[in-house]
Length: 563
Image (cartoon, rainbow, N blue to C red; front, side, top):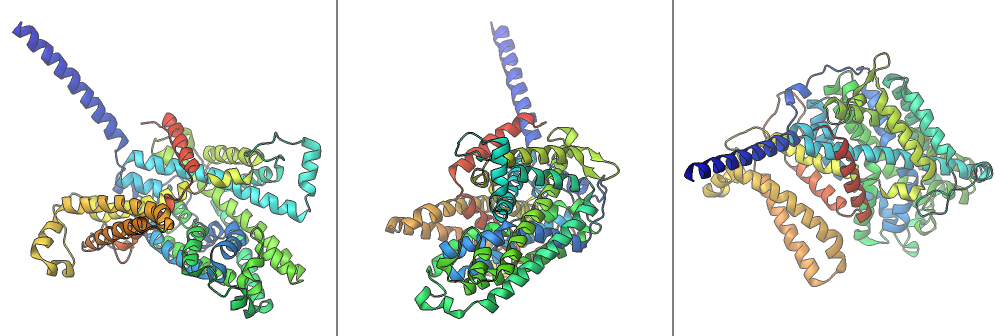
């Protein structure tokens, strides 16, 4: 009996051991990390042909899309009034924190994939896959939505002749909240044309993008200058609401909307693998393009409110309508042409990024290897370009712009959120240091506190706690504080104070240098910590349908992932 019991126990232990081993192996695969040394290699099947100037205009094209022509009017009219210019300045300051994280990572790791690659190196395959897969969905849907904006502008210029002809020859789609009543052949054709242009290779498509972006900058400068010539300071007078009609809170509310106008600078990091000198060109391109866009957004939004009273602005086409109301028809055509250039250049920039992201995931063996195929002569990830382009074109063909717009932004915010986590982890937690050196001011407070802070476990707990409390603070700011009840305001203040205290404690640690000579973000650890907090506040504002789409898309991706 004892022998049989012992044998049974041994069999049971063997089964448990096997299960644990299998589970550990599976978990290990999900959290396996990419080698930092391997990722830093400059060898690539892609062609290194891009210069800093091409990357600067590439970043401008990605950021100065429909946002400057449409979003500025919405922020001025409904959120901040003339003070919207300050909202854009605030957004620029906030974007700098995220931008500094991208600059450091892209110079250290000049590979395609952007935040996906950075997350793979620091946190492992599963978090990286969720980031990369969500970024792909946003690029596909975002490209379709911008194509719809281009199509609607062309249709408006033609006085609806295109939509009427399409309805006559092809009929209408069934009435639905999600489908466009008209088959959008213009949006479909635009995506196909840009896909064919991208097939010519990075050098040619980037040169075309450079020309489009340069003309777009000239248009914006001309429009902003005309606003100050034709406008009047009376539009900022107290009788018309003043400069701050919505108060200081309006500036902040405007910033929560305007922040999306700055998204796109991270796409420069996706071009790192095709840059001639990534460690010199990428920081220059990213920060320069962000600076130029800030000046254009500030001058344009301020000029628009100077040109017309904020209440009279058209939210959909503010520049076109404002110039028409002043009887300057040729400037309204410049504004319409600028809108077309903006949407076209943005689409070309987006369709360039998308196949590179497919390539990065496939090269790591995360998705089907066919997406890693690079056409030898052109140096273009062919399968990813054709698949993503056709999928985006089909979405633009049948869905309306409101349906598409509601699903965009999760990928951008998730990548911005994760880049902060990635950089802090890289500089403070990636290597197994036994203890951490503190800044001089932290050591002077209390020897006992300094000894406690030096422990690695303390740093880890503080960091994880900061991430959690930042998310809670974001929820309270967005959903509790607007109630203006005493308990909601008290909870927001208390949790915010805890969040600030954790931030101060984390600032006590000295950062570690990963590699001497490579660009390092200043004021560490403020850039990654502030990047996480800002984007945590924004990501919890997303509609529940966006979260459902994220969940469904992630499950679909899990079915094709190759663990």
